[in-house]
Length: 312
Image (cartoon, rainbow, N blue to C red; front, side, top):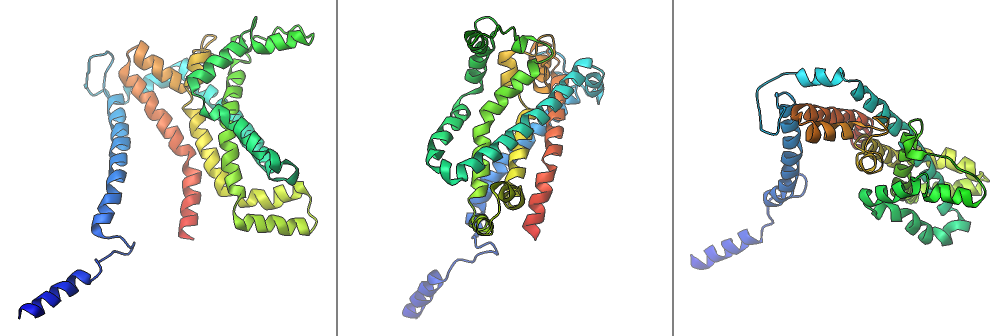
């Protein structure tokens, strides 16, 4: 009987391990699931904790978990500063995202055209350089360039005979727009790479070649062929840029600190001041929850589009 038992054991070991519908064994499934669980616990655990703190009456450095309900949300909505921040964030959302996407599409398309293909590596290096810089370095450098008396911009204007009196970030009428320009400069390279990656699909390249053979102009190819076929990439790009503008902090903190007055203040800057300077911990947490809810609403279009593509 011993030889028969040995043969049965060998046959059993030779059988493939049972796999699920996804082609994974239970052990492999657990290995892939654990990192996801860690991310979910850390991300949503932090979010739930922030929401819990926003419902407490925590006004000092010492913890105070006394339940206060929506007290701090009502407090925030009654503050004029909060609505100034919302208006400024809306300016960032529109003026920071739209020009970045439009310029990225045009620049990426130019790099795809034959006369510019030899320059692609140089242009890509040039536009990706700002992406590699930290926001602290970026803010410091641009603060120096915006300096009214000895800054680079006004110095260059004076050198060509223009007596520039531009105050840039110290002018309450234009300060926010000069800050948004920094954002566009830093994120443009990132946007171009995403748009270019959408261009490089084999199906789209074949459609472009067919349109070229049919005699379509470059503008017609861009509008009628390329843009309709890179919607997924553009939606990802727009969603990421919207979230980035909504949580912008470093540029404002370093260049203007929300000034002059509160004219360049944004929600994230208000949250930092409320939490760390005024020690209104629950109110600061409330602003954080509001920022999250706004970001969640902004990415709903991408989520709906992705789900539709998934189930098609």
